[in-house]
Amino acid sequence: MKISIIGFSVAGLMFAGSAMAVEMPAIAKAKCSACHSIEKRVVGPAWKDVAAKYRGKAGAEKTLISHITKGGSFGWNFGMMPPRGLGANDKEIATLAKFILSLK
Image (cartoon, rainbow, N blue to C red; front, side, top):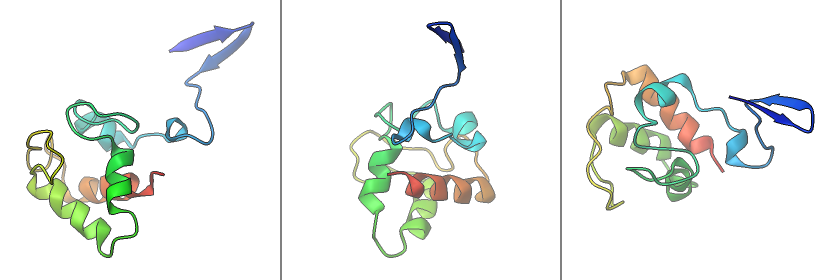
């Protein structure tokens, strides 16, 4: 998408200081964006909310990897996430978990 602002062309503008400045990994775009976004609830919770839930907890990354791998509702009351989302492999799941936990 290309937007012109007062003669200034901006493509893919991101705002520093917000989660909008974070680029979603390719795995997230390909296999997760139908149900999740960074900032807001879609079918499942916003990833910034997931990050907040696990922030500072021992074993958070391992727990999140397990949840993504096994699927479930995890107390969010949004329904059930299928195991591995839309078929993510172990490396993709680890990348996604690290990404989610990096969000502020």
